[in-house]
Image (cartoon, rainbow, N blue to C red; front, top):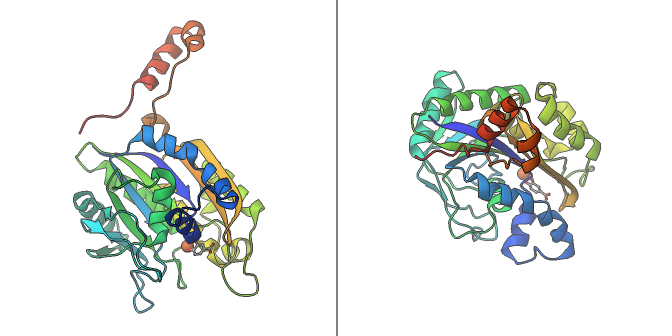
Length: 315
Ligand code: DHB
Ligand code: FE
């Protein structure tokens, strides 16, 4: 059976991609941003997921203003990087997982979420920048990635609650896929930012930090944030944070926060990042210390030994 081992969220600022592509990651401005993802790369190298599901938004790259699906699931075998005005980013083609994607489409649509099935699509910075942040810049992405594009560019986007419930339906779909796969779910976008208009450059760290706190501890509270509140508090583009709620819905209620990073600004945006692991399905092997072994009672030692055993199963 496939299972979700963890959820990862991060901002997807296009200038981060440009800094990578133009060799500027060590410049002081960018070093601060990239330093925050070193631990995530280590975490990812240990977790070694078999598949990722990337919840992101298309920025008028694959879908023009002529047609904007609310939820679009990438079911193709591959998704080339889009030309966003400066030529396609020099990143690997995203390889999909058509079998799992078709299974998710069936399960989620029969659960009454009307996804758009996409058999050909290019992917923009919304997906590729978060991949770089946690996988680095390899020749090939280390695992297949199923893109799921959410409309946050034209009113009305889906509600945070709808996104959260979609996450739950995705989890159900993954868990009914017979192949033994370890899956991570990315929620991308945000955090607070506004790119144009009189409030361009708006950043609200207080709102962002409370969002991060509640993402771990009380995500249901976040599902009640209205579109208007997102706009007022987190800027016009802060609405991208509803995509973090798809990720949150897809993992355990009591998922453990294993890493968090927040910095301002990167370009116009507050950069936030979080890794939440499902407790029962440890993504990364935990080490039992000598002290734990000596002092813990027998029951706790047995529980610790179970955690120590890597949950990774062969395919
Ligand atoms: C910026 C951030 C985004 O998330 C985006 O999609 C476009 C631009 C920015 O900070 O400039
Ligand atoms: Fe964006």
